[in-house]
Amino acid sequence: MKQLIQFLDITLTGLIAGVIFGIWIGNNPQDLSAVTYVEQQQNTIRALNVLMPILGLISIILTGIYAVLSKGEKLNRNLLLLATAFLIISGLITRFGNQPINAIVITWKLENIPDIWSTLRDKWWSFHIMRTLSAMTGFALIVYVSIFNKIKGRNV
Image (cartoon, rainbow, N blue to C red; front, side, top):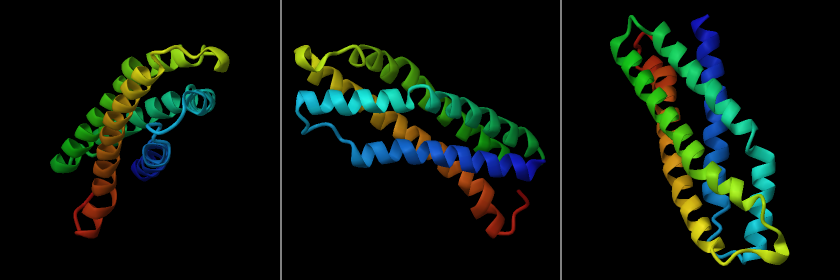
């Protein structure tokens, strides 16, 4: 059971971290025109605004379960609890930082983009960087416990 949870946790958290990291690396909106930014952002919102929070919640739950199943290994359990905290932080940043901005941007019409578009873009991007760092840290901790610790001969 523990190996299945571990596998699902690595897979789902890796997918989430990968998507978030890919947006960070490939979709920096800084030099986009207002129309291009809104088109890109609305497309991303429609594609990911429901799926990613669901996957995020599942990965938080899996990481928590993985931590509980690692109760006999204090270091691993603590690292997994820390990973869970980083994933929760990433989710909270998304919910209370990015998603309220998404709710505004999704309503914009290309022919009537408000003057505050660049302010909201920059604010969204700052939240995105914070959640990327948090999600990547959580994922790295899960990988460390699951793989690196095992390579060093520790019982995971």
